[in-house]
Image (cartoon, rainbow over all chains, first blue to last red; front, top):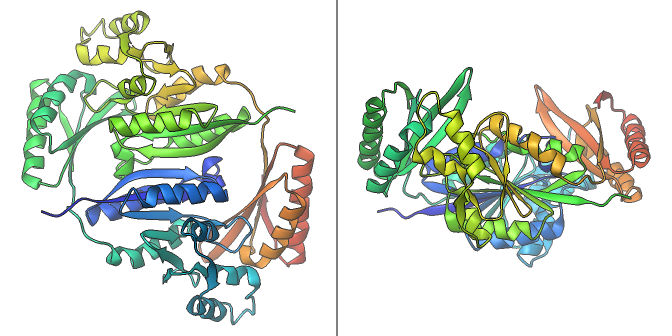
Length: 249
Length: 249
C-alpha cells in the first residue's frame, strides 16, 4: 500500500490579495499533484512581506512533505521570495554560476543583461536550480521547498521539471455524479452512505444554474472498487428520491 | 487619519484543494473590502476537517480585525464549518428560531423541509444571523468572524448584508500603468522610485501575451496625491527607457 504524500502551496503576492489578479496556479498544481498521488492539504495566500514569508515557509515545511511557492522571483524590488526563503532556512544567497550563465546568454543579443536581471541567479546556499523551457530565470529547490514563478505559463513550465523528482503516492480516484436534485433532499441518505464508506470521501457541491440549483456528488478514494461501490449507492439514492442523473465523470 | 483595518479569508472546502472547483470568492471579497478601506492580509484554503477549521479560525481571529469564511454551511454531512467554529469559540450550537422559521417557510409549498435542511438553522451560542436575499439559509456572525456560503451567488448576497456592518478604514487608491517594456529593463529605476515613495506600494506584474511579455506597474497608497506622483515618475521612467504606455487605469 502506497503512503499518503502531502503538500502545501504558498501563493505570494499583493496582487492576489488585492483582488487585482485571479490566481490560476492553485487548481493547476492540485490536479498535477493528484495525478502523482500527492495531496494538496493547505494553501496560503500571503503578501510580499519578508517576515510573513519566513514564518509561513517555516510553519508549512515541517507540516507537509512538499511545499510549493508561486510568485515574487522576478527582477524587481517587490520580488523578495528567494531572499526571504533563504532566511527561512537560515542560509545566505549566492550567485549560481549556471543560472548566471543562462541569463547572460538569454540577454546576449539585446545586450540587456543588468544587475536586476542577474538577481534572478541568486539562490540560497544549498539550493538547486529548477530550469524550465519558458524562461532563462530558473525556479529553485531547497530542502522540501520548490520556489516557482507566479506567471502561470512559467509556473507550469517549472512544474514540468519538478514533477518527475517528486515521490509517487497513493492516487486518489474521483467519480462525479451531477443530479437535478437539491442536496438537502438527499442529505440524510448521503450521510448514511458516507457512514458505511469511511474510506471514501463523499462531497456534495451545489451550484447555481439558470433557474435553480444542481448538485454534484463527488466520491474520492484510493481504492477504485470501493469508490465505484459508493458512487453506485449514490445513483440508487438519487433514483429513489425521484432525481435524474444529468452528468457523470 | 483613518486607521488600517485588516481581514483574513478562510476558504473551506476539499473541492478547492483538489482543483475541482476554482475559487471565485477571494477576488470578489478583496475588491469589496478594498472599497471600504479594509485590507485582506491573508487567505487560507483548508479542507473540511474539524481540527483544521478550529485551529485556523482561532489563529486568524486574534491576528486580524475581521475573519471571513466561505464554504461548508449547507445541509449535507460534509458541511461542518458552523459546528467547528462553535468549537473554536468554545460554545455550543442551538437552533435559531428565526432561521428555523425562515427555512420552514421557504420549503412550505414543497413540503420538503427535513432535519438536514434544519441543520442550517443551527448557530453557535452568541452568534447572530446574516440573512440574505439569495437563500433562506442564513450566514452567521460570531465575534469578529463572518461565516458565509461557498456558492459565489449566495456568498455575494451574504456579503451585501455584512458590508454595512463593517468599520470603514483608510481606502487604498490604486493606479495601474501597462507598458510594453519587460520589467527587468526598468527594475533599477523602479527601486529608486520605491525608495523615495515608501508610503506607496509599487508592484510590478509581468504577464504573457501572444509573442512576449508586458508589464503592469501598480501604485497603491491611501494618499491620492502621493500615489499620482509616484505613478507620474513611473511614466517618466518608461518614456526614458524608450517604452510605450499601453494602458492605464
